[in-house]
Structures are given as C-alpha cells and as structure tokens.
Image (cartoon, rainbow, N blue to C red):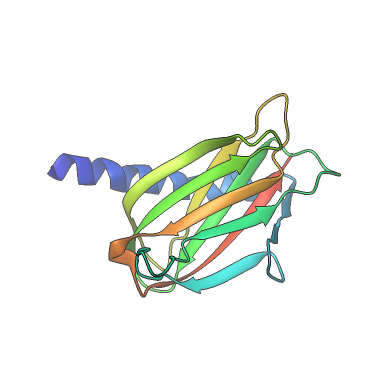
Length: 150
C-alpha cells in the first residue's frame, strides 16, 4: 500500500511539472459556465447525499470559434490537502472523454496541480468538466482554471 501512495504522489508531481511547458504554448483561458471570469474559487463541500448535492463539478465553455488541441486545468489549493481530481472533455454528440481520474492526490498551496488532456482529432469539445473534491478535501479552499491551447 505504501508504494501505491508513493506512485500517486509521483503522478501528481509529473502533472505539476508540465505547467511550465503548457504556459509556453498559445493558450486561451476558458470562461466558467454560470460564473463570471475564467477561474473559480470554492470550498469543497461534503459528498452528495439524498438531500444535498456536492459542489465538486465546474464546467468551462470552449469557444467554438477557435480550435484547441489540448486543455490544461490548474488547481491551486489554499492549504495542503488530499483531493479527488477528474477532468472530462464533453462533446456535442453527448459523449465525454475522461482524460484524468485520480483520488487522494496530495496538493500544497505552493505547487498547483496542472492536468492536461487532448481533444479528439476529429472533434472539438464544447465544455470541459473539472471535478475537484473528495471526502478528505471537505472544507478545503482552492482556485481552478482551464485553458485551451493550440
């Protein structure tokens, strides 16, 4: 079990290490669905129950006037914690590609997680769904954004 935790931490570090190259590309910040601006700040809610929903999902609009081959999400927590992070690229034909799915990712406020996913060759997604949450992260604050890159 100990080696699995180490591998997860290594995977998180690899995602973080990609941030420099992603910023060097020609990227455009994506608008938050139902919000104003290109980033969202949240406190992770407890998991969903019969009576309440969680706030773990945030969607970002992909402008159809531009073509992006890669999408880069950045999650920066205010304090260290373990998060569940998933990223989906949603397409007009009611399908989605899960491009990232990890649980118990350790994050610190000095090192944002950077997640990268590629679009299908023959289709442009219309939205990017970013899930940031987890039982261990309940009550933790973070800021997230997504960029479309050519």
